Amino acid sequence: MTMTRFPSLLLPFVIAGCAAGAAQMPDPKEMRAQVEAFNRQQGRAAAADPAVVVEGTVEMTVDEVAETAEAVAAAAVERGGKVSELTLEAWGGRVVVRLPPDEVDGFIEAISPLGTVTARSITATDQSEAVVDLRLRLENLERAMARYQAILEQASTVEEALKVEAELTRLRGEIERTKAEQQRLADRVALARITVELTPSYGEESPDPQPKLYPGLRLSHLVRYRSDARPRVFAGPGLSLFGSRVAHLDFDLLADLSGPMDRVDALLVSFGGDFYSDFLGRGRRRWLNPHMGYAVGYGWIERQHAFTFSLAAGVEVFKTAQVLVDTGVRLVGVFGAPGPALGVESTLSLHLAF
Image (tube, rainbow, N blue to C red):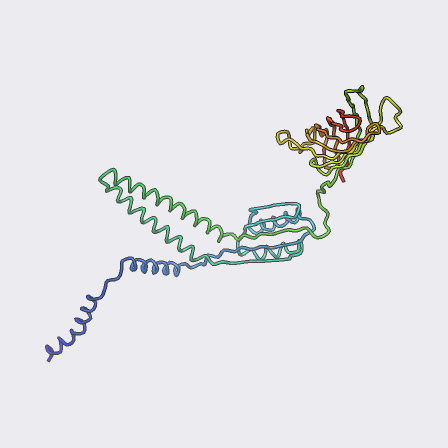
């Protein structure tokens, strides 16, 4: 009886074995992918502490941007943090701090009374998966490195050794890049990044007012030359106005020095522009800024109307944000009745910022 039942008990296993033998074997690539996926899952399960990257932005309006920026930096340092960026501009300021994630709430509470918080945004992103992926990638690279080093020791030809050395060089580069990426991610996890944007309150005066115009007084000395007459010399006061060297307006009232000084013998109105040299300070120096330019305009000389064109060269003798002292020479072409003439005009001007 026992012998009769034994074959019947084996029959299902034999059939199953035959079926298994007839089935197609799994693809090795699929098996490797499944093993790597299982390893990653096991690695993530082994990660006890989540890796969280905390970043945020706080926008504030304040009365004093510079003082508030210093207070924000001090609040971060007091909580074990540091300042990674500090920017102060005319529009406001920006302070970027790095501090332990547990100190973020206390830091924001500490800086809130410094001004009016207009916006606040804090994000926390779980990077645990990225940490595990980098760790597994590094482990695989190091194992591959060890295998290639073993192969290198057994290389029998120079060609084989060179091929293995090339692969080892590639692996070393991958390992260094992976370690650097690990370090960057670890730094982002260890220290939160908070950006504090500071905007001046409405009505706050600019600490550094900028001039819009430079109105000024000038003295001019003009020598006019004509082929059919002797040179004549004129001198007198004038007005000058410019917002920058690119455009300026000049107005001169001149008297003939050979006659009475209480009358106007020549009137010059010109509009033009001057340019600084990039090789000679670009006009940014306090003393001696050279410039050159041109001007076109209208002239009334000896009761005759004329068109004028001039080329100029000058020097800003002294220059600040409030005061400008300038001197220059212009070669003036006068075109009109009774005929063309040439003039040389010297000027000295004093401008005050507006």
